[in-house]
Amino acid sequence: MNVGRQIRFWLIGLAVALVAIYLLRGVLLPFVAGMAVAYLLDPICDRLERWGLSRTLATTVLTILFLLIVAAALMLLVPTIVGQLANLVERAPAFAQALREQISGLLAMVESRVDPAVMERIQGALAESANRLFAWTTHVIAGVLSGGAAVANVLSLVVITPVVTFYLLRDWDRIAGTVDGWLPRGHAATIRELAGEVDRTLAGFLRGQGTVCLLLGIFYAVGLSVAGLEFGLVIGLIAGLLSFIPYVGSVVGLLLSVGLAFLQFDDWIRIAVVAAIFFVGQALEGNVLTPRLVGRSVGLHPVWVIFAILAGGALFGFVGVLLAVPVAAVVGVGTRFALTRYLASPYYDTDSGPSE
Image 1 (cartoon, one colour):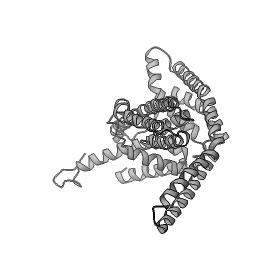
Image 2 (tube, helix red, strand yellow; image 1 turned 180 degrees about the vertical axis):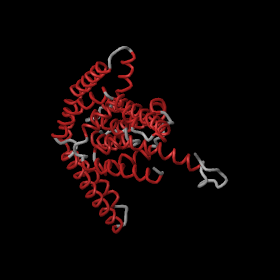
Image 3 (tube, one colour; image 1 turned 120 degrees about the vertical axis):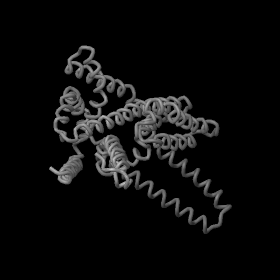
Image 4 (tube, helix red, strand yellow; image 1 turned 30 degrees about the vertical axis):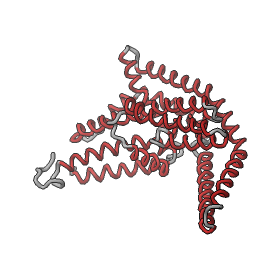
């Protein structure tokens, strides 16, 4: 088989896979989540095997421990989070009224100093922005209620994901060996090398960034609660979770917390303390946590990660968000490999000989 036919074969296979993921995106969530958990737990399972446990026993112990930790965390946090969210929803009209009064006072002050025609354009722009924000918020809420947070999906995630995790984790090495046997023999060594680089990149980013998100969530939640901000626990955890997308968590958390602090406190010092918590968190993330836990050499640029997550979410919903980082790692490694081959080929330097 010549190179052209091989390329067509793999491109057709890739297209079929993408179409299948798109058509089945509504039922793939528990399977993708189970695969992600199995991938993260596989190194621990391998270590338990080296200590003398069988693969099945190690998998059983790890799965049970993981479920117990998740259940304990939910039992401790969910009641508080639900209570704060319910309180936030109940007080949302009051917050909206206070914000409207603040904006009205600000507009009245600006109106006395600005030309009426300019002021009219500003009011029109603000009204249009408010309408767009309301429409976007409504769309997001409707998507959440009809998608990832729907009862059926939540039940499938809770029931099916542990089962998928157990079987994938138990058979991980056998599955990897089977897939290795399917590789085209002439390129098996190169594909193994690229797969190893993808694994190192992906493991470094997921495990490191997951730890960063956990530590930042704890820091923001504790800091905002100590500062006396209402709903500080919820905002801190949301900011920590969104920190998986570079810079998004800190920006969203800063805007939410400062906005609530502006409505809750009359003292500018306390508002400044709330804002300072996020600036300190961003400094810790950029200078301490990310360099030590994620590293500078994982090969995933923040802009590339943001684009991958947004594109995956737009194309495949929440399943696309889960698959975005692995796909970004694969594409990044493949792009660097292709660029290396190009720089060593006559297409780049006419004096170069043909590459292997």
